Length: 263
View 1 (tube, rainbow, N blue to C red):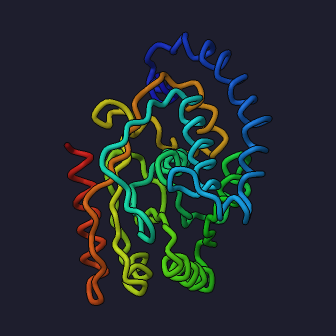
View 2 (tube, rainbow, N blue to C red):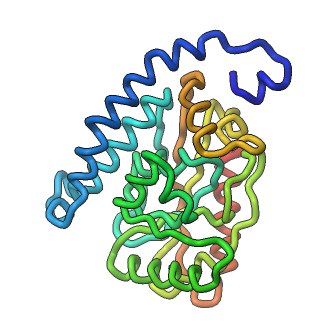
């Protein structure tokens, strides 16, 4: 039962305090032991070491993220295969936990609002994990972000974006802004749409989403007490880059995510 249902006058979820009782110590342990270990392993040396074909620092971030999902009661299920190497991953966006969900399956440097760098816990890992920060409303910042994206892609790295430009209420997929696809066109790499679904058949999208006037900390604490549920990440058919078709790329990626959400 979420805060949304409580405010609607439905019975309170009496199990919520019990979830806080056993999840909070696990979260504290993950912060005290797991966070320093993860940050320690994100360094130039571990970036050159591989384990089963994956960079060691990337593997550590996936471990950190997967453990976070488990602590929050999320049972992650992956469908499809993420592209290797340089690719632009584009996903629907409802909450901060979207980045954690994707990182549990594939490491990539996300483009995110600058405020995230100041978020406790998530912001620390995001900054060390190569997040590209954008100051909303600043054209200079946007130009710098696009330049960094092209550089990362040309270096063979993956970049993740939320083309809607902001989180949504979870009940619909917003318009995908075509401009964010330009770096993929310039670097000549494909875009892979990623559908993120919470709950059975996506029935918990609005629960996971930020509530009205709900900030990061409020959403974080509310989700920590939520019932366990499935979290699905669908890596869908890639869309090839097109010199004259960033709008086509955006629309095709959105159509495939909408279809996966409805499927």
